[in-house]
Image (cartoon, rainbow, N blue to C red):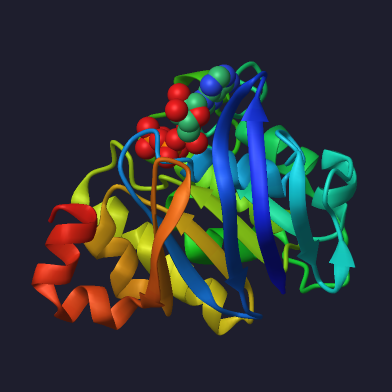
Length: 231
Ligand SMILES: Nc1ncnc2c1ncn2[C@@H]1O[C@H](COP(=O)(O)OP(=O)(O)OP(=O)(O)O)[C@@H](O)[C@H]1O
Ligand SMILES: [Mg+2]
C-alpha cells in the first residue's frame, strides 16, 4: 500500500530524515514512535508532499508519489489528521465535513456513518469549529479524513491532550478502520495505547529508523521497550 524507501528530507539546509524506509500493507495498522524531534511528523509531511524528500522514493497504491502535488496525493486516497487538528475555525462542523468529501477508488463514507462512530458529532453539526473542545475537534478532524475515502490514514498524535475515555474511542476507531480494510500509520507519544491497536511498529531517533518489528514484541518485551522508547 505505502512503500517508503531511503528518503532524505531537508528543511532548508537542515537534514531531518537520513534514509528512512518504512512500509504499510493494505489494512495494516503501523505505529511510528520515537522522542520529540525524531522526524515522525516530517515522515508524514514527506508522504503528503508537504516536505518532499530530496532523495529516495515513496510509492502508494503501486504508484510513485515522490514529490507529487499534495492535492493529487490526497485525491489518490491518503487521509491526514494533523497534530494540530487543523480545521477551518470560522466554519461550522457540517461545512468542515462537507469540504472533506472526496471520491477515490477506496470505500467511501457518508456523514451518517460518522455519527455511528462518534455519536456526539450529530449534535455538533451547527457549531462553529473555533468553539470546540480538543476531543470534539479530533472527532471532526478524523471524520473529515474519512469522508475523503482514504485507503491509508496518517494520524499525527491523535490522543494528544484527550481524556483517557476519548483516547480509547480514538483507538477503537483505528481498529474499526482496520476492519474496513483501511491502512493506518499512527504517530503517538502514548505508545502503549498505539501499540495495542497496531500490527507493527517502527521507532525513530534523530531522523533514522532504529527499530522495526511486530507491535506485540514491544508490548511484551519491557526491557526492549524501555531501551527504545523509555517506557
Ligand atoms: N519547519 C521546520 N523548519 C526547520 N526544522 C524543522 C521544521 N520542522 C521540523 N524541523 C526539525 O526537524 C526535526 C524533526 O522534526 P519533527 O517535527 O519531524 O519531529 P517529531 O518526531 O514529529 O517530534 P515531536 O514528537 O516533537 O512532534 C527536528 O529536529 C525539528 O527541529
Ligand atoms: Mg511531530
